[in-house]
Image (cartoon, rainbow, N blue to C red; front, side):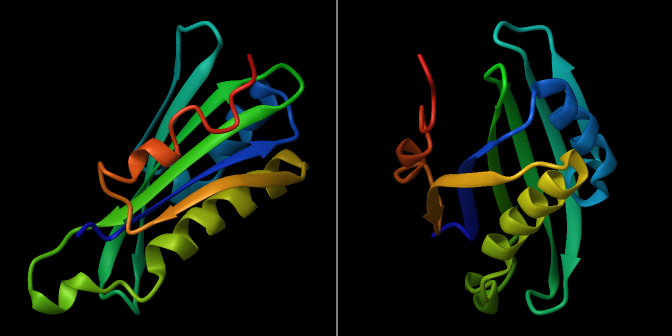
Amino acid sequence: MALAHGLVARLHAPFDTAYAALQEVDIASNIYHEALPTEPRAAVAVGEKYFIRAGNSLSATTILVDEGAATLVKIVATGAREGFLDFFDLGSSRDYTHLVLSRLAERAGADYEVIVEASRLDSSKARALWGAGSRG
């Protein structure tokens, strides 16, 4: 069982605004960020944050997809497991995805709507996030 949480949301801000905001959110992009040469435009970022209650650092991967006046946002947060007690993160991965999303929205000066979430995310549940919120 994976200790991961994923969500898909729509940020009511254009892609350029969303990507600039993402670069300013340290917990979302303190490891890596890149705007990809794709159509529609897309970007990916990886961040890391230590969660005391999980006793571990978690990482979050954020994907932005240009939708014109809005930006589709996908975030997956997960942590490493080493021992028996690592099968519980006490909601840290869920909280991390929401923290990234709320800080992104705050920096972009925009509101958002969560489209779908998946707790205890693994490859069998990932389908819930595929294509969610896509326009077209």
